Length: 182
Image (cartoon, rainbow, N blue to C red; front, side, top):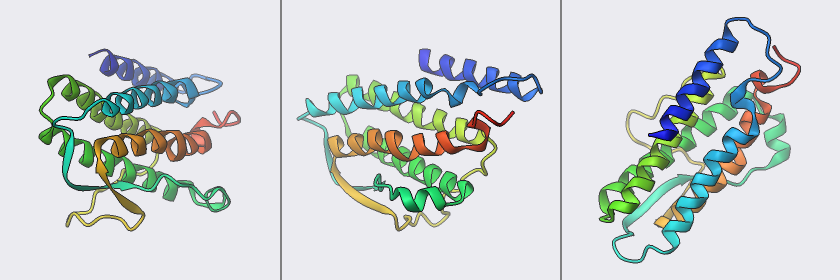
């Protein structure tokens, strides 16, 4: 609904800036855009706190690690960082899809659908910044930098922290988002 239109408008503006017209900063690089996604993730996390019936997980789900060693991150290659973030987004999307199937509350289905859509939109944004597209493992193996959550609350806490941490770091250090780039 609204969120899809919001992202569509952002991507159109992003295309406009690719036409060579000067722009001091790409719209998606504006931290307020990511702040909106983070706010919605926090809202979903808050909603999961009140969910008691029908919100348990049948089995633990793999999610990305959210901790960041800033010394290592600062020295890292931005393309590798983009792959790590996209891999984490893929894991979160897989986990949210698994939860969506098991939860019976239609009110929560809407929140889950929105979270899944937002993850997809963030992935599109990352690809629009000329990072290589992430290819999920064909055999379904999980990357080593993961851990497992056993509740929906934990899942959405990881979701929020992942956006606040690694996604924000990637976007703030992306070459296309630096103020000195055109």
